[in-house]
Length: 102
Ligand code: H2B
Image 1 (cartoon, rainbow, N blue to C red):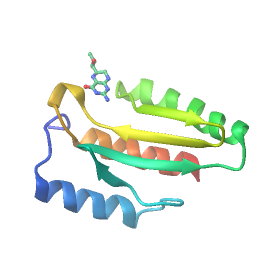
Image 2: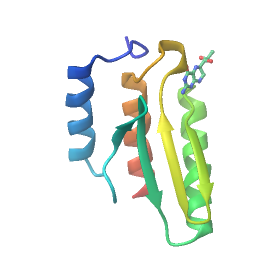
Image 3: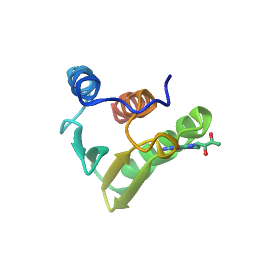
Image 4: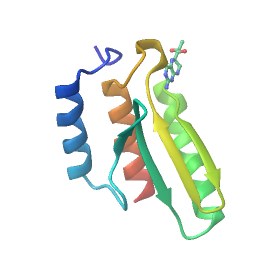
């Protein structure tokens, strides 16, 4: 299922696929059991516009990021609380974020 915690092998494969996609900037990584990326934008408006668009996508997916914003950077940590780890849903949301960031 989408909400089943991925094992180490599945995690490594999914991470490789995600980072081979149209990801802007730094690659995604695993940090403290979360799927992590820090997005850098030109200014605060770009950063907050990104967050606004992602918020609508996340709500539609019923899957929500842990994130924080400092001026023109957005720090993102994805995990599936229900599963106690990283699932396919986190990778789906991560890919949407990359697409929205452009
Ligand atoms: N988002 C994330 N990141 N993890 C979850 O486990 C989760 C969620 N659970 N959004 C959803 C909402 C759950 O509370 C509802 C009932 O589906």
